Image (cartoon, rainbow, N blue to C red; front, side, top):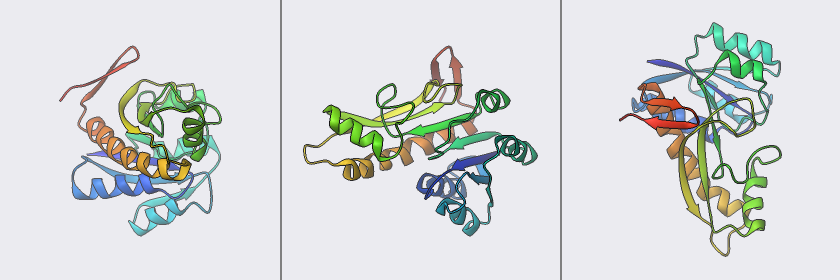
Length: 197
């Protein structure tokens, strides 16, 4: 069973989805540590309610130390609104995954987070959006893609309504990507991630 560390900045709905899935046994792993760079993030409370170590920390060196001390095998960035450094990536190469609320490489990278992503999709006139789970590399949203799922953009959508539907997809593909990682069913060749079911 793998030890999972989750980095958050907000409410932690994706975190809750991961906790529920590990507790049900659907994921062969356990959430051992939750770290937030925002002291008032509700996700920290979600972790505490589930008896998971919850830490507010902004210093990256200390975050790396915490992850190592807790023997974390997989790091999940679940709404973590801080770009991690190349040093961090190097410490945990191919052991960090991120969920992004669009179909990368569209509407991603610097400045695209939260509802700004969905507003960007609507403003551009895109007919389809979705969510992407990817490995984290040195760039912003540039790592190898593990899984994507689409969501149609409806004519009457605003950023909030679109975000709500995309979030359902986020929960689903993030849980599935974590399950595959914990079962050692993902392999990377260049930019391509292969699922070995």
